[in-house]
Length: 126
Image (cartoon, rainbow, N blue to C red; front, side):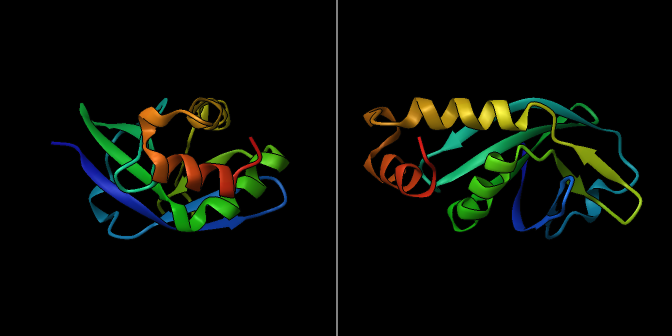
């Protein structure tokens, strides 16, 4: 079963964004590959980035409470990195493209549920 990490904070710099999560100790000293794919979690109002961690999947969940910050990041076209320590960061490749695709797909699409459609249209300019 895939492990889920929830983003606690985005640290937005001039050139990039550090994605901070709690309880990530299990990721230390493991081979982590970004999948370059995202999912929409309409039950929990979140966007989920997929990581391959030693042949298992880890879901990095971006909850609704940080979507305003995510919108700022999209407008600035900043790359995102999962920050594991001061000297180890994992690039979240294809993040902007995947998120833009999901946002445009969710717009007025009742398959995602009214709550998700409303939350996305409120947080993102679509």
